[in-house]
Length: 112
Length: 110
Image (tube, rainbow over all chains, first blue to last red; front, side, top):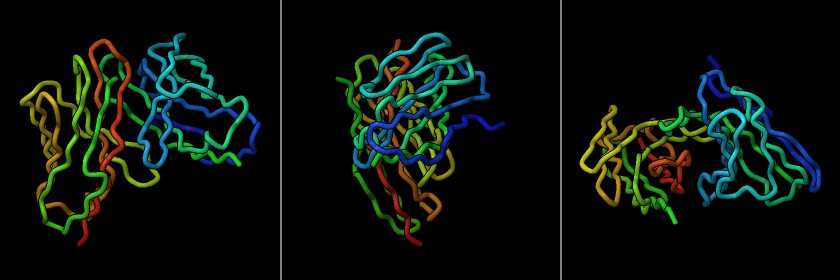
């Protein structure tokens, strides 16, 4: 079992470009999350989806959009990338109410 | 505002030198307190969940404890392979969101 798969692992963008980070799970969990991790800031929640068809904002949603395509997939889109969005992005999944999260390996994004 | 604060930010130990990491939280209606381990270049990996004051969980050289205001991760006779960043997180009842602390980077020297 792969668990939680994120693509791409690395990406370099120029300011103003757009891109989508993909996350897929094979754990049959309802909840899916996107976090960003920056030095000295810890993990901060961008968006989450408690179930298929629902999405909610987290702590730092500005500049991002998400799509819960189906139960397996949750994508994060940057419409117009900015240098402040340079970060490592983690997708996580969990059973509803349990909050024990399984994380993907991360996607390292650099915006020049 | 819900907050999770970890201390120290970094800790260096000699192999076999026991110590503790601290996680203090201000979350109303705490539902769960979580500890994760993160190795460089990888995603966090779940270690423990604690639900009520007085609860303790153990795994190998690690023991997590919980009071009404804070949690401790005790490391007994650590080995170099215990070197990692340890993250604490909390969630409140009815919420799907985890609030993470900034982590403690532990280095264990042989």
